Image 1 (tube, rainbow, N blue to C red):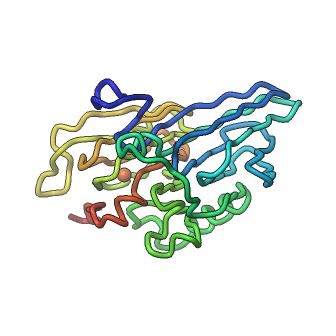
Image 2: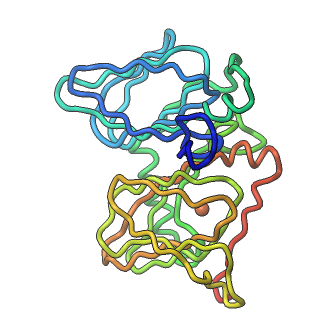
Length: 258
Ligand SMILES: [Fe+2]
């Protein structure tokens, strides 16, 4: 997106860069971004990451966050290939002309069994049907002010139940939304204005595809619909850690019954 943003690339939003990473069985990939934060979601496979003197095993469905400090080497197990969705904030550092040097948190793994268990719990809470979203927000104890996954990044594992309409909301952070599993009939409506009933005026419809991503721009209203008859999952990743700290997130929701 760097051409459209008028910035040096690669960049997916002014502050963030999203990547699909594919590592063949038994192979490795070394990265070294000038970024304060890297957030990885393991789409498939299993393996380990070496970060300085720390070894971190991972598998499908795990989230991993890494601070600045060392190059990272990701090893895929020999049995199968591995794929990641990886978001980092190097475009922000490039814009600032700054070099990231001080780690602000420790490498942190969020195991899939833990997050799926918690997501299942909130999904089955009595009032879940009335919530604006059914999801798990990833947090890091080091971010006691923003309550986000890193000081710049924000991430959520969400479920969109069958028949659900997640009412419109908007925020100044840019979402780099990864769709996980979905059947045809899952889509988002996106637009700049809402009417008096809380419906998006002249929306653009974005149909979901498994393991694809889309970007609701800052300030745009967006609503998620599931008319597929099967539940679907999504992982929005945003620069909302930074926006929360700057007090500029400006998140707003249309309330049920409005
Ligand atoms: Fe959003």
